[in-house]
Image 1 (cartoon, rainbow, N blue to C red):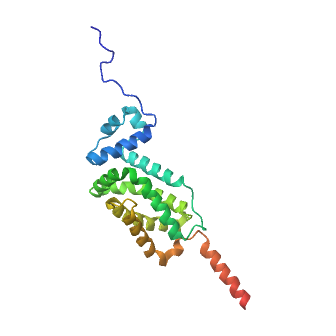
Image 2: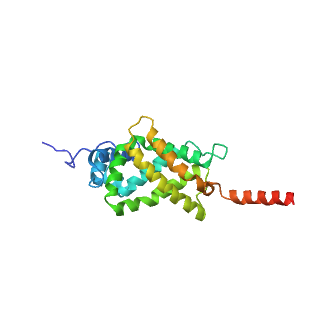
Image 3: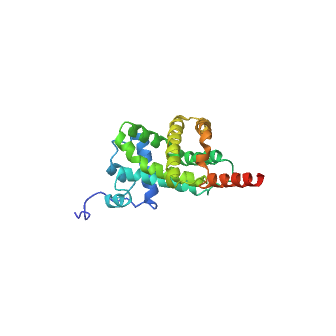
Length: 220
């Protein structure tokens, strides 16, 4: 009797959108089994990807998290930037960060397991920070707030603390409209208001100072 050439497993059809399938599969498996001990081979097999295709898309688990972050960023940014006429810097940051939490909602259980496992592995957690800070720099830009230069670095650092604090609430938030998350985020941002000038557009203080100078000159 003739045997099929190759004699191995029958190959499954390659996903139409391998990147999305990989992200969705990885988050589903993370929710079910945790993240730390989940192997790349296990994720790839469940996603219907051959090893070479998996390597081309994401050569490591950190790369899968980067893909997830960029997908979430893209969804938030697709709604367009907010400008000065759309509320205060605090209001705009609130809107943009809530967009982000809404975009993360389909992956909430998986993200929760990942955060839990990264919390037990400080080096892995630190490795995630560069991509997180890059994402939050884009969130600032989407809120009409500059992220460049020394001031931008300070803004990103402060926003990282606000985001991570709110993330803890979001992971435990069982409300349908994320009202607990909104309350936590609003509270963090309100505490920041005494330093709100740091979140103004680049050059804003210079313009204000110039206007004050002109006003003083006019009076004298």
